[in-house]
Image (tube, rainbow over all chains, first blue to last red; front, side, top):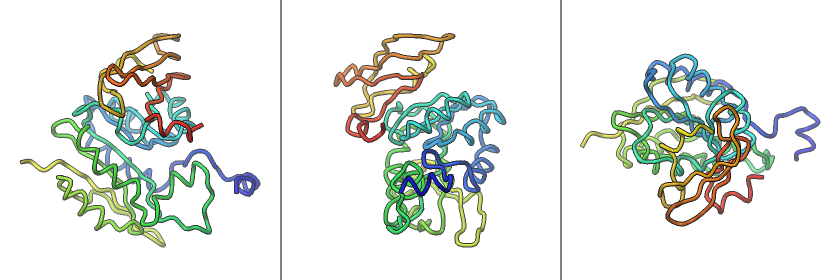
Length: 194
Length: 63
């Protein structure tokens, strides 16, 4: 399907910043301080990471499974690591972790088999990437740290919220935006005090 | 990559410390080299300033 995408001039290698990126940016920038160390998982074009860095003065690290995205984000001066979610980061280091995950349910007819499809779709329910993220992200959060996660009503936000609660987080929707076929939410996950 | 990154990264497989080996630098930034796990010995390349810390079984599909 790459030929068709090429003919139409459709980006096949990196997901470009869109409404969901802006919503994540808006939610995170008011919470992040200059002294913070921030990780953006799935940084893509590096747009959100570089805006957060420029607006807050925080140190922002970008990670992405896609090497094309890693190179683009690095071109924006973002320190980038090619990684599977938070796997190669030490325990308790980040004050904030941002993630605009692939959350659309996969539709076979629209399958493109390229890097952008990987950036958009999260398996049958749309939660294939979100679930392992929620299971593992708590490990890398510093004390007082928070996670900012974009979800869509197409992804089943209730299921995401209930998984996050079982994983030991308090969950709060901090931003919302409605679009013709979906509503986007930014969830703030903070470890429950025990 | 910036050398300070060593303070926050670890082996993606066993979370052990990594040992840095530098091949070339540009303006203080590490452009090429490798990170080796001090526990399991897995070698992770640093190319064009980007450390590839994908677990070995995910590396093949990322070309």
